[in-house]
Amino acid sequence: MGRMHAPGKGISASALPYRRSVPTWLKLSASDVSDQIFKLAKKGLKPSQIGVILRDSHGVAQVRHVTGNQILRILKAKGLAPELPEDLYHLIKKAVAMRKHLDRNRKDRDSKFRLILVESRIHRLARYYKSKAVLPPNWKYESATASALVA
Image (tube, rainbow, N blue to C red; front, top):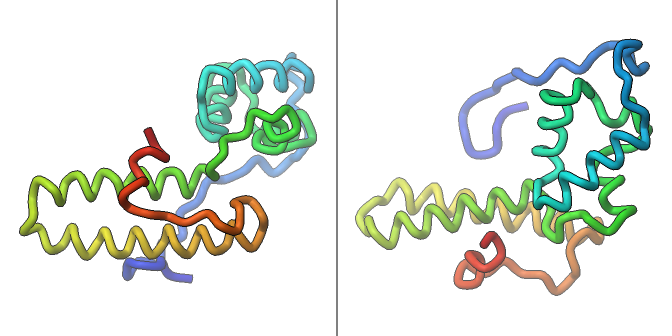
């Protein structure tokens, strides 16, 4: 399947380990990993950043294989999950940066077009999250108040 707003049909993806069992050399238990997740979340890190730190610094390839649950679900159970889903947050952050660029460079037509594409992805993703009850039904993306969401 192709990309939404690009002509590419890229197939690159991360390769997950074939075996789902915990490696024998990993000395961390499920509770140790959960405690580490809570500690990193309280520092203000996003779930994907927590996963990268656990992978690179602590040798945890997949949190799900060690704890039996994903990082976001562990955070939700503790009440530490971010209020905006991460992919939506990053799209809004990108749109805010593009608007800031357009304020300085009014003649940049390509950037204006790309902003329209990014905002259409934001609306599409928001519609999905409303249907899955992740966002409240009255949540609405507005470009004027968007910078407050990502600040």
